[in-house]
Each structure stands twice: as C-alpha cells, then as structure tokens.
Image (cartoon, rainbow, N blue to C red; front, top):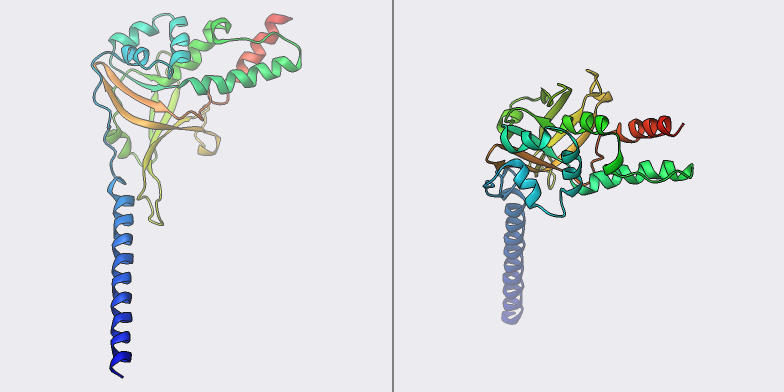
Length: 237
C-alpha cells in the first residue's frame, strides 16, 4: 500500500509539473502575441535627408518609382524641398501593371512598352495621387474612424487614408496594424473604392513622411492598364 501511495504521489507531482509547463508556455505565447500588438511606432530611425534622398538611398526598392519621378516635371524638386507625405510605390507594383499591360499588347503582337516611353502626362496624373502637400501622421489618421479624406498633389484628386488593427489569436483588433490607402474613384460609396495597404508607417525624412505600400499594390490602382492601353492603341492607329 505504501508503494502504491508513493506511485500516486509521483504521478500527481508529474501531472502538476506538466501543467505548470503548459501554463508557462501559454503565457509566453500570449505575451509574444500581444507585446507588439500596439507597437505602431516607426522602428526605422528618422532619415537624415530629403524624401527624394531616401528613395534614392533604397536601391532595388524604388527604382521604378524614381523613373516616373524623373519623367514628371517639378516632382523631383517637390520631393526634395517641400513638406510632403508620400505613399511610396515599390518596384513590384510597377512590374505587376507593366506585365499586365504588355500581356494585352502581346496578344495583338504589339511591341512591349516601359515606363521610359509611356505617355508622360498620364504618368503625371497617376503618380500625383500618391503625393500630398502636407504632413499626414498616423495619429491624425487614427482618430478618423471613417478614414481621412485628403486631396492629392497638383490635381487635388480625392483619396482616403484609414487605419486599422488586425485580429490576432482570436483577439479582435489586437494584432498588427496597417494603413488602408484608397482611390475613391470619384465616388462616395465605399463599395466603389479601390484599396491598397501600407506595410511601413511614419518613415520620417527631413521634409516629410513616407509610407511604403505593399508589393501587392498595382500602380495606378485599377486605372493603369485601361488608361495606357487605350492611349497606345490610339497612337498606333
């Protein structure tokens, strides 16, 4: 009976120890999931240079964006001197739309086109929608539940910028955060808007703020292929 009682005690002790380890592991996992849930500060240190300098310093990231910037009169100076907010478009976003455009052209045996030879005025129209002549900080966006409607650079085209927390581990709005950057398509109905997302927030330069859009974004939103395919076809006629 003593041996049996001792075995029971040992089994109980092992059960308690295992239970404690499970509890510790759960608490550790939970803390990892929540520690950075509300970390919306920019981990990148403020960049000592202009917004244009920042883009040029990130080789392999914004090369296509710089091609467009260099083709639009006055835009280099704006990004270098003026206080602006930029939603920076990475290379992949240009590749997405150029591949789609050239696929259409390839189906008709037309020559492929590149950013260097696309219509300058239309590039100007589209790139201006990513630039704002004011500093738009995350905190200002967060207090506007429906998003912040702002007019873009030069042509005052209306865009919307909203903030959201994602869900994590079953906790509502307890995950990472992101900005939703939307083309209103000249409509008040949100169902007509085209959305994209920023993966980096509040990158500070000497003259502005930069938000990097995700690589899944298509430059020009839904307008690029339609606009340039139409123009090129008219020029080819």
